[in-house]
Each structure stands twice: as structure tokens, then as C-alpha cells.
Image 1: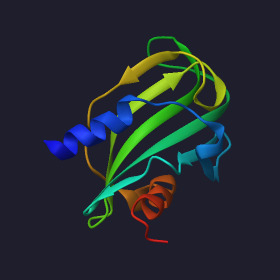
Image 2: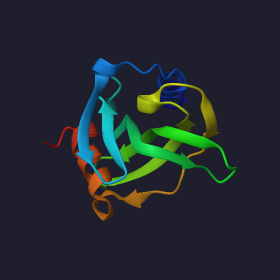
Image 3: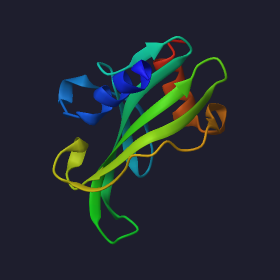
Length: 129
């Protein structure tokens, strides 16, 4: 319970400060960053914020236009797995503007090695560099 409460408090408040984001990869669609100040490691579990700054606006399933996505991810460092905890789509670049859609529900565990971006974040979150 204590662990869940700590993680919830960390991820409910999500101010976006430009100096906290570190770019870890670039795709044709977006620049991907992680928040170096909001990485929490407790035992074999780590939590990290991930920001996808889209090069052009996109539409969500409800037709809302968004320009960036903030993602809270939980990593199981021992098993090299991850799951999404929270996803916020925002109408501004670099996590700015208003939230146009949000999902706050833990997803299914996935293998980090199956995604190059998730594997890079696993290394950062779990301090495996």
C-alpha cells in the first residue's frame, strides 16, 4: 500500500519543466525524452516518466488533436518487463497545454526487449548502463 501511494503521488502531479527532459531516441514521428528528476527505484521496481513530442499533431480515438504524450511506466528490473501506468495526451508541444485524453490504468506486462525505446528506458530506470 505504501509503495502504491508513493508512486501515485509521484505521478499524479506532472509539471513539465524543459530542463528535466533528456532525449533518449528520435523517430520519424517524434522525439522521445525521459524525466531525469522523476525516476524512482524501489527494490527491483522502477518508475519513470516518458515524453513523446510529436513532429505533427495526431488524433486520438475520440477525434481530439494532440501534440505530445506523457507516459508513466513501471519497470520490473529483474525480469526486464514494463507496463504503462498512465498515458496523457496534450494539445501542446513538449507536454504543454491541456490534457485532451487520459488513461490511468495499469496495462499488461510486456518484454522490454521487444521495443527498442522501452529497452533504453529500462536501462535508464533500472540504472543498468
